[in-house]
Length: 232
Image (cartoon, rainbow, N blue to C red):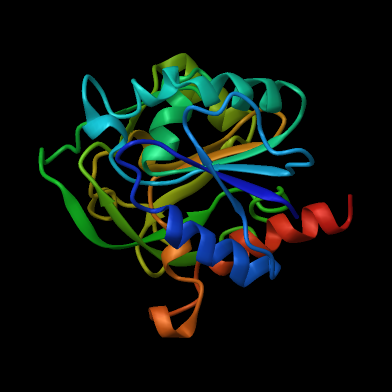
């Protein structure tokens, strides 16, 4: 699997993401600067990692969505390419119109930095194939604008078409208001595109891929992607 990680001014999780991808695939991903206009030849997966692109000026991800490289990412996605956006990357995908909805200020209007739990709402996708339906896993969250919002029509479509990938839950897998620390609608932590080839989520699975990190809860996302391309 040949992956490319896009680096914007203010990105700070590209090395974490590179470690996770290399851990799963045994291959170093390419780091792609935001001014590039083409993806590396043979790219299988584009990753938009976390951070504070352009200092979160205007809205989180709004300026990054206009970077030159995003035109290449859009062409890649339109051609059926796989794209993963984590935290700020999720915000950028929404601002670019590649995923629906928006990420608003956290309900408590403060930055959240803590572990959370998520329940896998749809198994068998390129991003979730190594989890069972309803599996619960832990991941760190670190964001001030992670409150997923979509209007009623969009929310009904996401639920009706099975495009909700992950929901915030308790360690026992219960979807409760208390588990939804940022106030996201319907406890949504991550969503998928209709063709299941784009995924955005707010917490950071890349920060739990090795026992030395405190666990391997996030590793199945990356090994799922590896199997997707190994069987292609």
